[in-house]
Length: 197
Ligand code: ITT
Image 1 (spheres, helix red, strand yellow):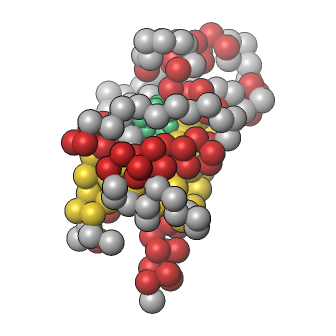
Image 2: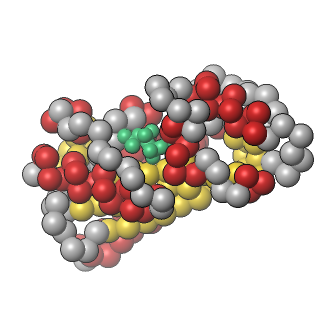
Image 3: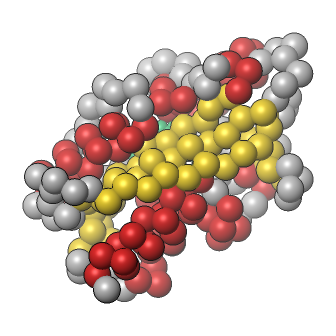
């Protein structure tokens, strides 16, 4: 595989995934370079939505495609916002309003445990019957006030209790070392290598 389309419209995800794929020598292309419009994400599981996005991009570009569907799952909220993390506070999407809504929903809740989940699907072509699938999780807690300027989404509220830093306080490289996306991508690459050997 020489070229790979990253099936996302999220520039932060694209940056994290491209950084992780850099050592492989694959030409990583953004779906926006092909004017691929946003895919529908009607499903209630991360993995189904990731498959839908990868298939959409592979079909429209004629190239292998890798999609990421991810979100934050808060234990005390029964796993919410989950698959609707990007639009938790409605359209137009806004990280600031999503964070405010999450803080309001967790007002007075002492169990602050949460995890990020990432599902990755790689399709060699649109009708690939054997998608390469990998998932990863990152456990932490939701703070009561945001901290840090980096990252995106819920990163200023998500504290890694081992590092004692929010994700918005760490670099992309450090995030990729421990994140849900980093874990999923390393697992995916392991499967890809196994297949090519
Ligand atoms: P694409 O569908 O185009 O990939 P998206 O942002 O809409 O972009 P998702 O539907 O997978 O992607 O929603 C992911 C949302 O989950 C994202 O917008 C954030 O709100 C949250 N999220 C996922 N991973 C995150 C991370 O590493 N840091 C912060 N928030 C994250």
